[in-house]
Length: 435
Ligand SMILES: Cc1ncc(COP(=O)(O)O)c(C=O)c1O
Image (cartoon, rainbow, N blue to C red; front, side, top):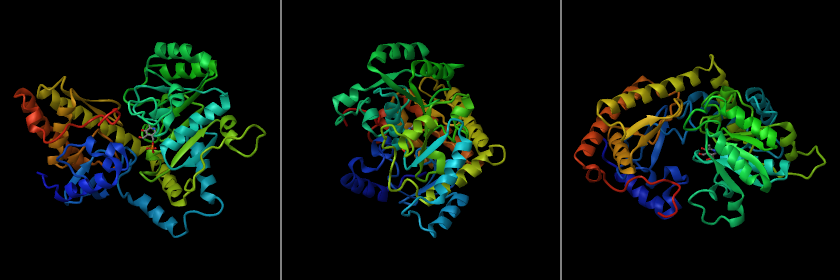
């Protein structure tokens, strides 16, 4: 039973004094975890991590979904170590930039040109900028049911935490519901006169697209001269190494990748139609678009990590992808079976797509009590992010922890003791106006 967080608690105080939010990513913040939890991690290997108090956990977050193969996965760390000896950033591009670009173009159905960067937000923000420049229109339609597209104002201004974003920027982003063609058509009709530059959406996030849905979105975009952007920062490489666009057979105009591209190392990509992408280039006579230019965009060791990740994902008939989908399903089925057997249906369930399931909880007190109990049994969990390193021992330990934690939940709900058994505050939504 894990219950010693002495050093973590010291570091928790220090971090919140020094860093707004106590972490450099909101979803790693204290308000996203129970009080009885590790604050600071020292190292990870495979699907396990160790905190500053020496506690060992199974990690079901995997670097906010970015680590698909496993922490410190040797084939990746080896190519990085090797590349470090060659230096990582020069006065002109490394030859690896074009080499990897060519591989991405072969890999992703919609990719005719590629621009690399370091994070997903840069890629999605440059996609909407490019769409505006290409169409000469300004309105962005973003999918409302999907949680996150960018740290930049065009998206954050359309959330509950929009402080600091100008009214003008807020007024340019509108939203529509996923899997609801009528809603999309109504939204387009409403804003058409203002000039819609693009639709940005994940091809799939928490639910599968309905039969034909994505194709109809594609057709509407073509008919209305709206640029279709697929944000594949999470789905790309996880749903399928050729992207969810390949899996669902629909080709966007632009798409963005990040997260799993290099097994947690910092690289992202904007890809798309040549005719649109080349506006960011040097070989046209139109007005120039300042498209993704960062000091670190072509860092060689991260490009090498991307190449190696891609090689592994393409290997052995997509063994990694198949594995990740299968264990996600196993975990989901096991959880829901235990929930049924304990009479907890309606209080909790595991939902979503097998390669990326998520938890439903009736409220955040129940959610937090569950997370608190899982931590006691050595499992650190927000959703389920399956990786190639979650093997039988991690899966069986997790299912055992489900059984024990859900029994506590069942007792707490039956005896109306959820608030009493939860130590500290419940987890809060990231997108809220006030603390
Ligand atoms: C779908 C999606 N798009 C874009 C981003 C932004 O990526 P990054 O955090 O690398 O900027 C995220 C991050 O969580 C995401 O989930």
